[in-house]
Image 1 (cartoon, rainbow, N blue to C red):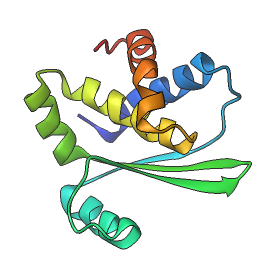
Image 2 (cartoon, rainbow, N blue to C red):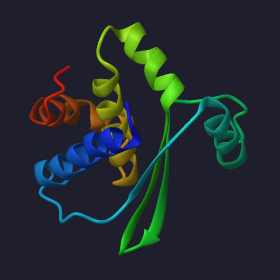
Image 3 (tube, rainbow, N blue to C red):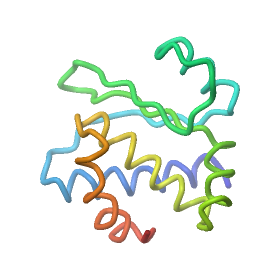
Length: 124
C-alpha cells in the first residue's frame, strides 16, 4: 500500500472524527514509520525501549494539534492477529492517536471507536 493510500485513510478518519465530535478541524501531521524508528521515538519521549503501534505528540499551539506516528510493521502484524484488514488497522490507529491528541483517555475513547470507524467504512 502506498503512502498516498495510507494518508487518504488517515485523512478520512481525521475529518470524520472532527465532524463526529462537532469540533472545528485543527491541522495535524500523521507519519508512517518502521518498527525501529518508533522504538527510538518511544525510548526518547517515553523512556520505553520497545516498539509500539502508535504515538501521539500534542502541541500547545492553536494552529497545529500535534503529530501522530504509526508503525507500519506493527500495524501489519496486528491486523493479522486481530483478523481484519491492514487498512482497518491504520484507520483505528489514526483514530486512537487523534483522540489522544484531543485529550481523551482510553476509557473515554471506547464508545467513540465504533461510530467513527463505521462512518469511515472500517467497522469493528
